[in-house]
Image 1 (cartoon, one colour):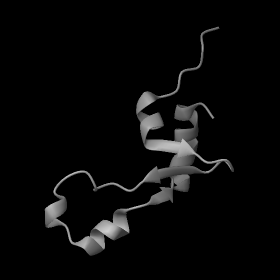
Image 2 (cartoon, helix red, strand yellow; image 1 turned 90 degrees about the vertical axis):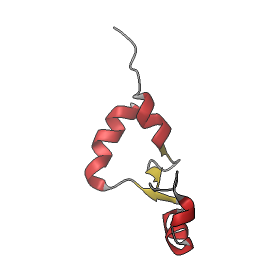
Image 3 (cartoon, helix red, strand yellow; image 1 turned 30 degrees about the horizontal axis):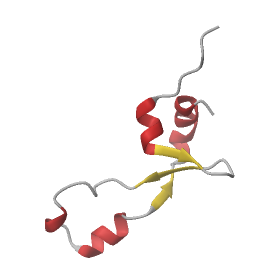
Length: 64
C-alpha cells in the first residue's frame, strides 16, 4: 500500500491548530500594497478559520 501524500500546495496555505481547527492567511497582501489603504491592509492581516464549506476538502488534502 503506498504512502498517503498531502497536497503540497494546500500545506503551504492552510495549517491545523492544536484543537483541530484549520487556519489560513487572508488573501490580497502580496503586491500593489502602496495603492491599498492602510485600513484595508490591517483588515486583511492575521489568520482566519477556513470556511465550513471548505473544511472537508482541506482535511482530505492535508491528510487529517
